[in-house]
Length: 114
Ligand SMILES: [Zn+2]
Image (cartoon, rainbow, N blue to C red; front, side):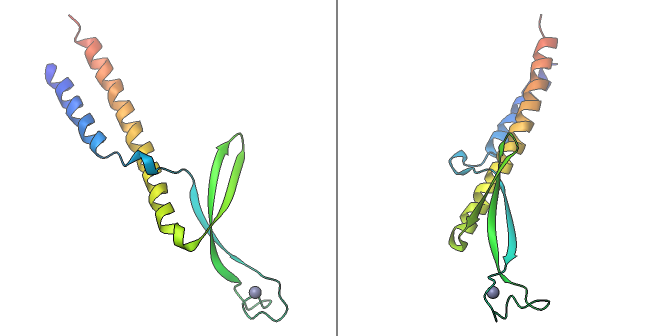
């Protein structure tokens, strides 16, 4: 049935429209933690009471080969970074869907050969 190819091609177009701006993508995840300054008498770091300073934000990037890099993130860059991380995740998700769809398309085209 030719309709299926048309349908799959239309779905692929829709997926491509959901692809984010690739120029912004950045891999990794954002973590935060409290830190202790170890200065005597600091009320934020007081034993048993203080929660420490922060939170400080850290970008954790898996570079492959069991290499993980942790990069501190300045507050003023965090929002932009979060958008880049989201764009990367979205890109991966959409790419996977397009690839699976192309697999279906390939099978359908193969089936439709005269
Ligand atoms: Zn402190």
